[in-house]
Image (cartoon, rainbow, N blue to C red; front, side):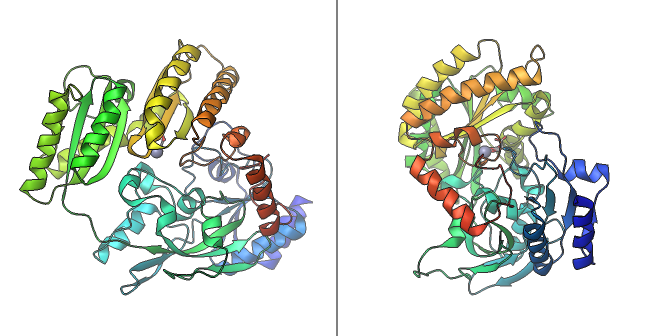
Length: 461
Ligand code: MLT
Ligand code: ZN
């Protein structure tokens, strides 16, 4: 049946590139989560919107599940194909389609890498401000599907703020042209925003019009060493009041240990439990003095133990590497990733509660903390010890995540701040969204995708 269905797809779309070699199935069937064994039916690499529509119509008629696929850098299993699905990779649809100087928008295909979007915006003297370490590999379509956040949310917000228009092929094969780059459009439901963050369950983004911004002022990058978690939020309040922040990211000594072992250079001597990399506008001497004053005040108040200011672009990049290299340095340890958020005002109380929870539940397991503390977003990575089997480790982590989800619920937080729910956090959706909301989400899904062929099992069971 499936071989017949594939033959029928090739008959209908003779120019469609289809891959069925074992190596390709393995490569395209997984994302950065390593928990599932890839087992897709085949990989389709359409080159046009018409081909995407053709695939969707074929999938509806043949009841074949589709897994939309971008750069597959996701961390929640959203792009995993482990049950005979057709992977629909947007890798060949990776071009810049146009720039409009008056609208200050860039129109792109979904498979373009975030870094290429940055480069294209810069060619016009502007920036696309969403940014994070996977910029070279992730695709803009995937960023849209997960409403990606990253390291500059504190200044610029999430992907959602930067999408002026979307062309989407819905689950039924219908092409939707959503918002068309309009700034003002008060004409009913905004399906563009519904698709952003829907994790490939409602439609496939086939074109995006991105808003661009003026480049920021010249900036400085500082690395701070802090004595404890309390100091972290106090230094954040101090710096936010005095400086115009572009980023405020934290990590622990455990995280530092791993990036240093992975080749990064130590920038501050001695042992310190917490670190912050912060970047702020520093266009003139006054702004630079304000930064120094804030730093000195932090030191006097015992909130900051040490610090360095980058003196060159190369030093700034080296300080950023300490933060941005963490994910890669942890990957060999098969981390179980928690990506949680609470309101900034709730962070101190929440931190206190979960610190004791995690110390109690993981007495002999290494837990690495880092993340976007200025957005109330923590990445808590639990590293698999050699003594535990993969299955026992996951079972233990799931048990703790359940407790973490209950604590989050009490503090009004979210079980996924920016990575998405995918497969990894599906069991905990109820901790963040009410039963009424989930029922509505299911209703929306069935309207966009009546045969349930788009990314089944992701987001919902
Ligand atoms: C990050 O902040 O570096 C990314 O969300 C990736 C990760 O959490 O590992
Ligand atoms: Zn992150």
